[in-house]
Image 1: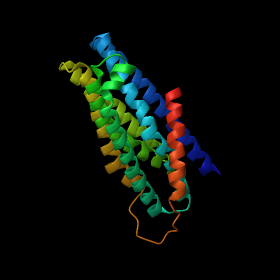
Image 2: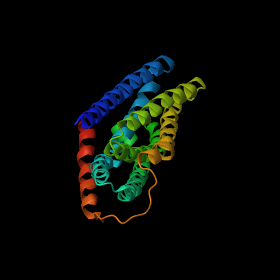
Image 3: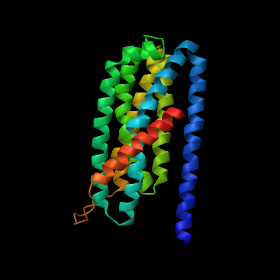
Image 4: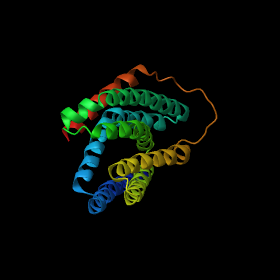
Length: 242
């Protein structure tokens, strides 16, 4: 009983800390940039990143919800191999979906920037951000869902801290060197890539250690696909309405 309570308390602590990291460093990030570049340029960066974040809501956060549920189940049943297969298939499916969405948005970037934002100069910025930021964030969302399901919330906090801190460093450095809006977007993409590398090559092997091959019950994947599809829709709609 005490062990379960301690685990719950520890998870809640890291969840609160994660929110503070995202909100606190995120606010400081934009305040610093507001002092460094013109309001119009900052507005463009916020529009593009806001649009990209909305798309990530469809491509990544749905799988995060689904993976958290199934990874928790496999963890409780001591089925590490099934968990690895689930994560691998989920990442593959998410990358395919994000790739399709990136192509569609890139093709329609001119219309989106002109009709939705009345600013044709956003087209290339949208293409760059969607092509570089969307795939990495999609995989990160899947990995964070796995960490949540494995009840290792400190890894979620670490991943977000790496992204927030490195985003600030990369973006400020790029703006200092005169890259303006593109520098901010480049900071988002580089920070996302760095966070992905740390999550996949450092944190994931510790969350799901290598284990000897053994027979595990085949849970099937059809119900997983249905659940993930529903999660994509519901989380995407929630993102749009936020």
